[in-house]
Amino acid sequence: MNRKLWTGVITAVFIAALTGAALAHTPLFSCWDNGDGTLSCEGGFSDGSSAANIPIRVTDEKDAVVFEGKLDESGELTFDKPQGAFSVTFDGGPGHTLTVKSGDIK
Image (tube, rainbow, N blue to C red; front, side, top):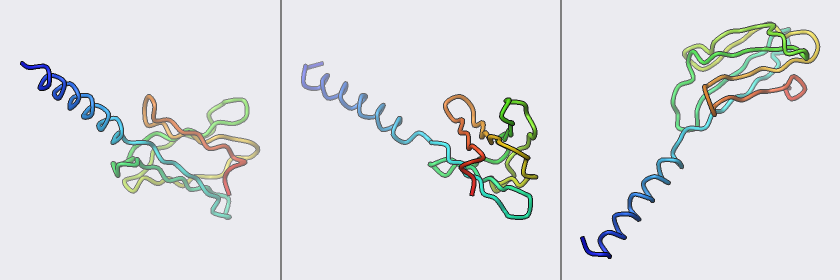
């Protein structure tokens, strides 16, 4: 193979690898206070893939689990609002975990 062709092949492989990384899905997760003693959370991925059945874990300030559930087929979950400070974690697997602290929920 001549040098120009080989350089072109290497460049094409490198660009394809970078493009694949750029198209990887990023987790998206938000929670809001419904004003009736419940919270709702919604999750998804930036590429539009489903977050159905993704585990959601709510922990108190001592990191004790106070609620566990899974997002429904629409990527949503509603649950009773815990007392005190807490965190809600979307566990989409390695590199796809997001946590929302109670102080950030409006």
